[in-house]
Length: 195
Image (cartoon, rainbow, N blue to C red; front, top):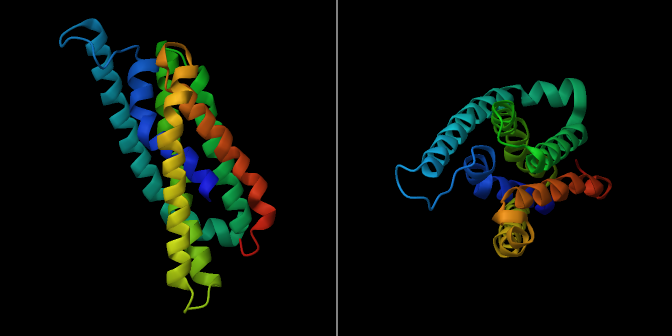
């Protein structure tokens, strides 16, 4: 779960910045009214709209998770779908350019991440609630949250070197590495007994 959250924190912290700088070609520090600043502002607005669509998809997916688990894919399949979809979407951010077609693709990436976000927000807690003894649930919830915080710290402290490795301080490198790590979380699936 911690590996998956590394991908999520990369997304949460840098998705709007990626859209504004990489996809729209803007600059946050550009003077107000300049073409670079206007492009940045358009990118942030586009990211905000994509994230609103993401929220609608998250809600719809949340309503459909129970039948999806019980009738089709099961909890392992759902975790696999979540990890691979997050990894693929974040991985694609490295190659999205600034054409109008790329802007549509970037919008779709941010919006479609509502599917794995819905799974991430419900599956670990549902599995824990179902399989843990009542006396252990509080402690196990604390451990789950600790691993989420550790992932946040990894992203927070690992971002600067990654951005410096990329050309022009491009944050898509952070999203790309987050995608690789999230996709790699599928390797932990055999270790998860109750999922």
